[in-house]
Length: 203
Image 1 (cartoon, helix red, strand yellow):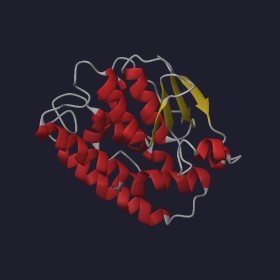
Image 2 (image 1 turned 180 degrees about the vertical axis):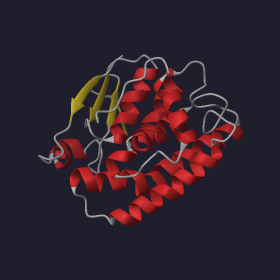
Image 3 (image 1 turned 90 degrees about the vertical axis):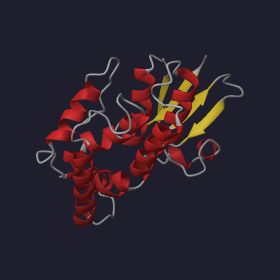
């Protein structure tokens, strides 16, 4: 088994993949992509991900690997292939639908809100910071209400839905989005960080 993850240390999308690998006890070669230098726009990288984004996972024979682009797709792949318990990506339709719902939130409201607010502050990205902070607040209001009386987003145990939402939520303060008004979210973050194998994202 050969696993190679093309990553970037400050990317929440890349951290999702790194965290999932760690929680599954999988060893992978981590290749840091020089985003500032434009490595993600080179033909060799675009051959793996035509959108020029991190992360990208390669699995198997280095000469002919399975290549998975997109962080949520990587979560689905790793859970489906390597989680023998079936807990990270439950098979029953109702729970699977709840997981998919939160994966959609991770690709939508989470990206448009806390992720982009953070990008403005850390990388001077050309987004409207006030609008991103407002979107983050709207998302966190929903998450806080959803977590009342439950420990996890989609099931009675942690799933890839929780991993997909964790990184940009936990690091929202880096985008000037406070988590102080959200005790339920902060408790959920602490539960994820207590999972065996947890690895933090670089601040």
